[in-house]
Image (cartoon, rainbow, N blue to C red; front, side, top):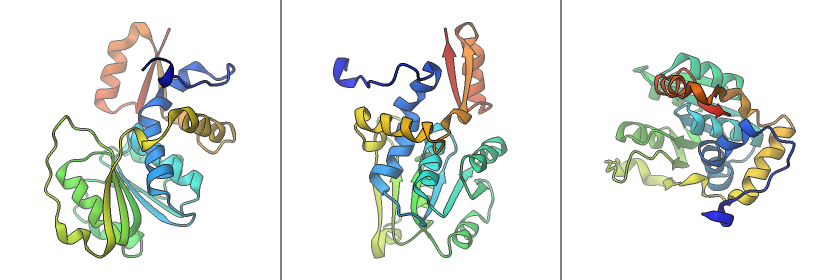
Length: 219
């Protein structure tokens, strides 16, 4: 990518916090702020509480969404989502999940973000919407990921949009996120755990188990 892919930031910023902005967090926040563009007071459901999903949660809170619901199987990640601005955090294994989402959103959410992109989750992300409503699907499961989507769920104005890297220009969007962070409105450092480079295997294992959301190696 060279010079075109470089983002200039202030020299006083902590280096360990900058790397995660360039991929997962940018993707989740950009999906909200640049693609879905929810209005203050609106409702959002985020499926998956990894770095991407929590980036969407932080963006939704910064925008002023009134209802921000996270769906994830891990209790620790659901708890973290609540500290970052989610108004509710639900277990993806709950058999009554669909009904609970409709109850919490008053019949359906204005927007949803699918960071998992399995057939089951994408269908649920669309079904959780009101009409009209919009879903951003951002999960990348490989070069091919065919899914079946119930066409009837798209009627009456529901839409699904694929998003890569948040559909943003990093040179302008990352400084915007940094400004929000400086203002205390985007505390993404809460999802970062640092490891010395010598502990890279520990960091990889922690990421694989879900014990940490975003491991960062330091030198």
